[in-house]
Image (spheres, rainbow, N blue to C red):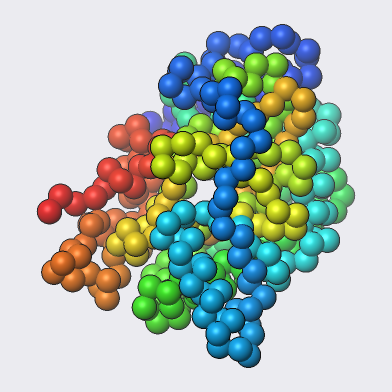
Length: 359
């Protein structure tokens, strides 16, 4: 098993190189099964009315304004699992600069990017596939994955040295987004009727994990046959997405339909992930989503994953478990959960649903 994890099962092809070669049809390994292909109406800019929440009033001296904002977040967590936030405290300049520096990275010569080529052992670095299954259907995207927290696993030597300001911007960006995650975790805790620091402590306190995945979606000659990222729910705690500022792509499943999210300028898209659904005893929803591609424009997005420490059992908060609402999940560490997903072939879809206890 170790030898398998040290290398990819097949030669890695960079999707960007395929796109740049001028092909008119995509290789068979990118063609999704019919049931997973985007339908024609999915590809139009149909807007998902996911809530847009102004966080400025969380610090208001007016208790009514604070309560209204808290209630809006609670509704979004329970009904949508997705929402956008504005006035979130992260510099708009920093957001734009970080996204732009990554766009520059993906347009560097291939041989420079190849210096950061990743392996299945950690996924850290420049990649073009996730699974180690031979002959798997692949997504139409390249990415760069790096670890941010805990500090003990953070190795800036694996971060790009070119473009010149990349490492500095990424470090600053990560630190600012962690602050936003900490703020949201406090709100989520209070809205669940828990102590303010409950969720953060349940996830490991100062040993919480965080990582960044920068996604690059090249132009695709047949966007109706493939996806940038296949349907999935995120396995961790919270995902903070900085979308492309001018190209749509994220789709959220709502009531058995795929809705295309239209990003608000200078907003982050927040989505709840599987471990938050577990701790909330399914009061909060971890929702399936995917990414479509198009033939006219490339896209860049940054997904920041805020996750539990790997070796702490994650389970429903005892305060949320009653005779009428028994615990829906057995304790399981985040490491065990990721292994469970991999061994049971549950990559994608809403894998946390398969863990529910039967009562």
